[in-house]
Length: 293
Image 1 (cartoon, one colour):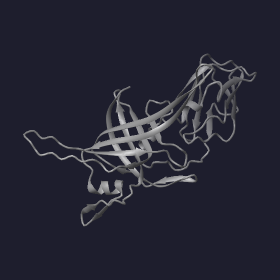
Image 2 (cartoon, one colour; image 1 turned 45 degrees about the vertical axis):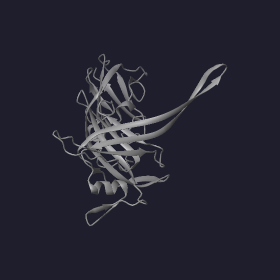
Image 3 (cartoon, helix red, strand yellow; image 1 turned 180 degrees about the vertical axis):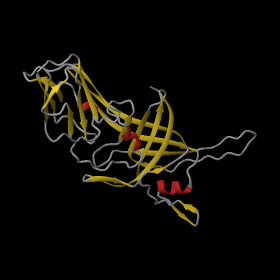
């Protein structure tokens, strides 16, 4: 799907990046962005064996972000380039050191969905400037700044991407995209409840199984027949299909055929089912119910 829009450019100064952890200042908006061009240079080398190509070795090269905006204010330039402002005048010194920053923005695709980007560590270069005398027809000159990007020391990550069309996407991802570069650590273990409830009797033969989780879950981690199983007491698995609600907190499984009268069934949810922070259920959850005679 092609992209037709760009908005919400933000930056956040990198405070610390070590093997022990990473931290950033709060994101700050950079409005009036016109375009962003990201280029990644990759190198590859082919190893030959037995008179033919046998292996390809690849390495990530330079990562460059070129940002075009209507104007970079002096205050923005001072922050991004490490300059100082004295009495309303920006002073650029040969020894100024630009800080490392993260950049965040979003693009809109032709079908109206969005793709979100975070470039995790980069440093702005002193921009070129162009001025032109005013003629009969105005020719506005915009500002362009180049960000040279590298991987983080903490985890070697250099970019994060979210897409509304991905099956694991939930609205809270986009809503919180500009709150912080890194979300606060989530170590809370999710829980699950089931309908029919454990030990339920006289359950209707056409009943669905509804799992309600305590928080948004990674939809793709629930796989029918693997991390989620509905089976008879003799181990025969029930065939069916399931759907998530929009918040990925409720999963509804509908059997293809009616359940057997007076039969006992087990609902099994394994620890492979995880939340958005990759936290697993604390244990395998098993719920048993009996269908009405």
